Image (cartoon, rainbow, N blue to C red):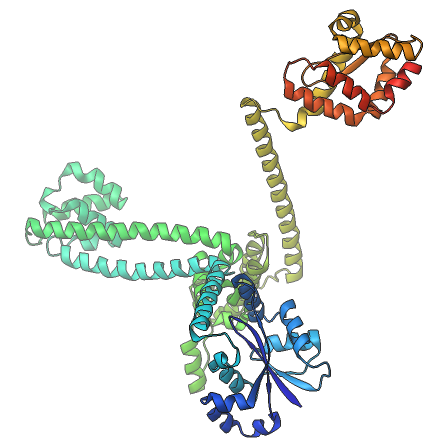
Length: 581
């Protein structure tokens, strides 16, 4: 059985045949040695076919399909053209997913083990020796260009790009918490040389930094500054205690330069604390848009930590509930396995309020139940197109009911009932949001139409109404003003009318009227009824449309008589039928 090897490169597809495959398979070390020597390797492997990519875009499209394990039309045609029709061979590929796709689509026997990886490594090393016209510089250039475009596409079309912001923000929040605590300890120690009693009265780091920034020299505190202190500490008793302690403080005097440095540092700590609050709000809004059900169930911070530890929301959705339960306690788990002791009951989900509210005997049970609900919520957030908080609220209520069951013994509702109810509410909410979206679109369209009317642009929707009003006005004018219209007709038209009278034995006198710029042209005759005019309009719709376009372009200019006569000739026997009648 012959072995053919498929090699995908940035420049194109290439197919090789391996000589004496059965013998080579038994001497794998000799093959590894032959790879370093191009002469020996070319005796073992021979090029069968090469197909270059037409452009960089086609190369990127083919490589994206190969990485996803999809057989493209170009690759399928290339294999069918260069491989023998008798399927007495084996095709070697580097990617097992691509091999499975080729086997399913074309029915070839595919392998990716054995000698195939070593042969492909040798082909990659000596590609310029097999394909004529390929130089080392051109190969490097094509590989670099395709690598850049492939990486750019992966970054641009990353499914988890919204998760990346959550991962970075929760990491920054944790780092800021550590830094703010460290800086607050430093400022307390530094300012306590001058005012040691303040640290016992104000325990909050953010408030302490604000107080240090406001007080500065403790001897400058007076009754006037009491209101400002109340605003900072939000407690009148604390503000009065600070004022009393400043009068009887045992702290040492401090120089103005030292106070300036303490003030600068306090401002930095206060600014960091305020930025931490803004970042927490950003994280909350991001979690509401990316994983609302998980955030509703377990909280924004714990949910963001779970996503960060898993790497992405998709990875978290793929984890089973048992993995989610101990996520973050890997060291304790492996230590317990190694020492054959009890495994941990919870990881990051320990920071949830549910586990803290449960009793000691029920902490493991509630953590297992909570991990199950977190796994369901993450899968809903990951794979649902229209995200709502309905499922998260229902899952949270289920955990609450389970806590009550452990405490009081009240049996909670079944999961099937709760999920069916949540699904109905979700569908109703999605349909209501869709209707609101349609209403908004209609309002936007109506607003655009109103703006066009203000700017002097006529909307397209009102054309039919205008045409009807124009036709009615034209019929009234034609009935009431027959004689003046006959006088307005030019001489060439009158001559043609007299010729028609002679031919048809002077039976009818034709009178014409040139209507307004946007109105169609009407032909008035003696004793002609409105029904006959309607028949003419139905038969001559094409001619009327042309007349409307020309009349709209002229804008209050009279139509020359020559154009009127030519339009009469174009009509399909309509004037003749009217005259005969």
